[in-house]
Image 1 (cartoon, helix red, strand yellow):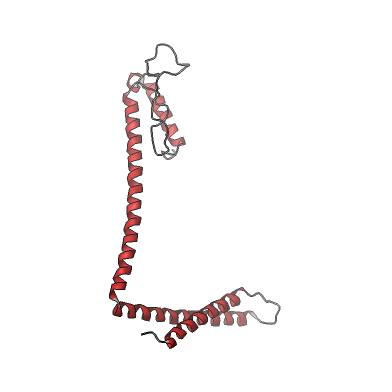
Image 2 (cartoon, helix red, strand yellow; image 1 turned 120 degrees about the horizontal axis):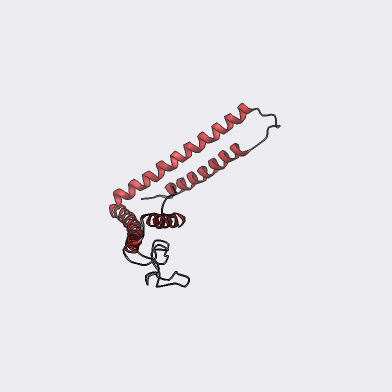
Length: 187
């Protein structure tokens, strides 16, 4: 269906488009204030080259639309094949995005679970658990050196065993740690 004349027309159109683009850029970037041309002449030249570029771009768009129409009428399976390929790429992209969100959701669930478990067990909640940053779980592996005698084996009494003022202080420290790690917004 395509004749050498059509192919030559496409080549000429591409060459015209490139020349119009270069002329447009040249007219926009040339800086010759002392060459005797006034501002109105420069603006007229810019307007003329820009209009030429737009006209050639429209011609090229029409050419490709004609070719696309020919392909869709003569070979409709090619159009369907292209659409299927685009859809499969889009599905893969969205599945990857969903997987990323599911992974983050699981990380946040684990973080929340560790925080909730830290309030229920008699271990010191020093650092949040395996939150999105991968830190150690709340509470420690056991007693640490330097703890006062008379404390439970976990290191510190559970939050429920502390007086109200100390509970509030402990919770405030935990919130501050979460803010410093970027897990909570600043006050």
